[in-house]
Image (cartoon, rainbow, N blue to C red; front, top):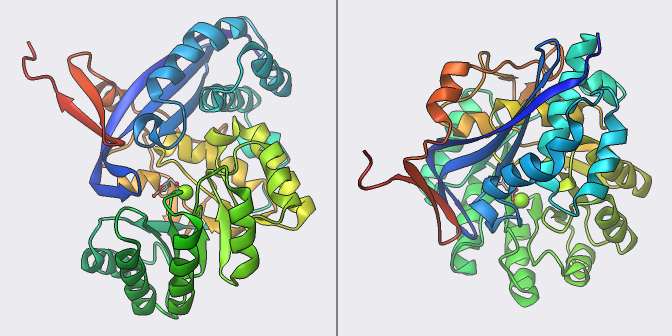
Length: 393
Ligand code: MUC
Ligand code: MG
């Protein structure tokens, strides 16, 4: 039954990736997480997670700022609170702190997990119940090497894990990117859907010529081709091309969703709990999408199974998720933080039936991957590198 919040702890975690992951703004070899552990007076635990890509390179927040925002400005208000008051605290967080949506999202996830565990129900039930039992699951090919990406895609298809591939481009010469993506799209033609994520790297002229080439090669969707502020350019691209244009960085809040919908600046919305500021904000954005007749894609920030499970419960409650999802984060990491892996098979990810988000922390793993004060975290060229200090004692 319900019981007040006793403590809230935020732990920084670094987990290496299985292979380098190259995006337009840098190359990742490890992912960083701010993990929130919320405990109630009966000792029950709720988990939340904020994952950032490239430190503050993808969005404004880093795991370090997330930790300090939670510990100093958000969590102290919630000690002794009833975790069942989900929307009350989601709204209050916007009064206590402006912005800092990743921090709020991690905290709201932990509260939702705890509230659902107290009631003994899956978290999805507190968001209206599931409309999807499973969601088609994309994989990102981003090794930086065309042959290696094709090989990796073939493996994923053979394992029946993924038949949607997202390519990360925008790193170098646009003509080379188009050639790279076109070769992969033609290779998998008729067997897999291939889409690209440009992560804001192009200007309008470059986007027009590049998308024309990508469209010809059969690329199905272009994610965030230009700077997030340029809704005018997004609008012209969406109008000009048949290939779907998806808003990712351009879309955080439901107000952004409204502006995008009103100007027809995107055909698809990428939803993420962290950039939105939590599960409730994500549901609000999805409601705008539904009202506007815009389909949604379940995005990710390369979460561990903790964040992935939180995203999955929320996405499962969203009818407008019609373009699949990319909740593959745990598969890219060398290890995970939970005792049981999430269920991914037959090209989909499946909702876990347990209470809360249905995942439990593996304490030994947490102990191993929690940030060691003897290691330094260096954001370099927009990328994340966790390197040992030279003179560790
Ligand atoms: C993004 O911009 O979509 C998520 C998966 C991936 O490969 O990159 C991201 C972030
Ligand atoms: Mg993206």
